[in-house]
Structures are given as structure tokens and as C-alpha cells.
Length: 88
Image (cartoon, rainbow, N blue to C red):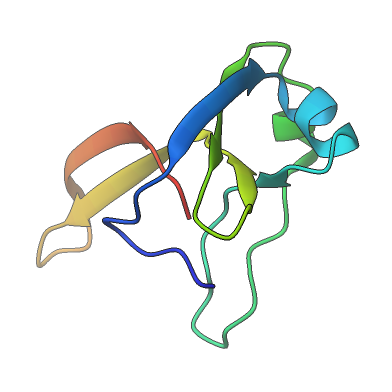
């Protein structure tokens, strides 16, 4: 099924992105307006730092990598930003 904010899973391991991908884990990325998912940037695959691999109901395993979320003001400038590990 589709993962959304609030989806509950269990951390089953920690892995670097390339290693997680080679073991069949998906890498979390944003769903775009057209329903497709953003491409995984090559620099993400080069990270040699372990992140949580989360197993969700149904057996789906996803590597949860950090993402920056920004809030823009009325002038189009960043008003606030935070880094968060995202599961979707």
C-alpha cells in the first residue's frame, strides 16, 4: 500500500543507501504531483552513513533518509526549514 504521514512501521536494521538498495529495500522519496516519485539523486546513493530501514505492514521495507522541508513566505523566500527523516 501507499505510505503516508503517520504510517507505522518497525525499524529492522540500519544501512547505507547503496547497501539497502542491493538488499531490496526501497529508498524513501517524495511523490510528485503527477503521481510519479522523484528520482533518487546519485549523491544520495554515495552516502556511506547508515539510516533506518523500516518494515511496514505488508512487508515493504524502506530506507528512511533525511529530507529538508521548507516554508516559503509571501515573497517566495524561505521562512523556515527543518530536516526530517521521512518514511514515504
